[in-house]
Length: 113
Length: 112
Image 1 (cartoon, each protein chain N blue to C red):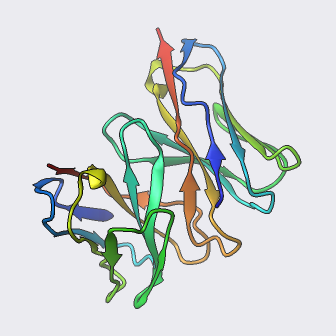
Image 2: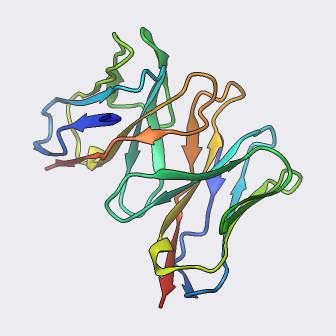
C-alpha cells in the first residue's frame, strides 16, 4: 500500500520557470491537500479539494494552481516561479467525513534560484 | 483569518520527565483540535485529536482542551529521547471540517 506519493522529491527551478508537483493517493480518500513548510515554520495550506472537480483556496494560494480530475490525483502547478516559493511541499489526503487524520506524502523540496 | 499559536521552543526536558506543549487558537468557534508529530526531515503524523473540553489520554500522551480559554495542550509523560521532534498543533479551518490549519510547531528535545 503506497499511501500518498509525491514526485519529484527534489527540484531546482530558475526564476520565472514553471513546473507541476505531482501527488497521487491509493486510499480512495475524497479529501486532498497541498501544504508548504518553510524552514522552522509550520504548515501553510495552499489549496485543497473535497472531491474530483472541486477545489478551494487555502491560506496562501497566490502563485499556485490546482486541478482534481480524478479521486487519486491532485497536481500542484507553480507558474512563474519566485524565490519566495522555495519551500518543502507536502501533499496529504484524508477521509471524506472529517479532516480527522491527514496522511502525508514524503514531501517535495523545491528551490527557486 | 484563523490563527494557531505555539511557542517554537526548543523545549528541553530530561528523560523520564513530563513535557508540556501548549497551543492557543483565535477562533472561538473551533471544534476540533489535533496534535501532529514531525521528526526532522520527515512528514507529520497524527498523535491525538480532541473535541471535548477536558482531558483525553492515550498511552503516555494526554491532550487537554479548554475552549473557554481557547487553549489546547499536550502532555508527554515519561519522556523518551525518541520523543524528540517538532509537535504541531492543528485546528479545523471551518465548521465543515474540510481542512486543517497548523501552528508553527514546538521543538522538543529529550536528553538521556
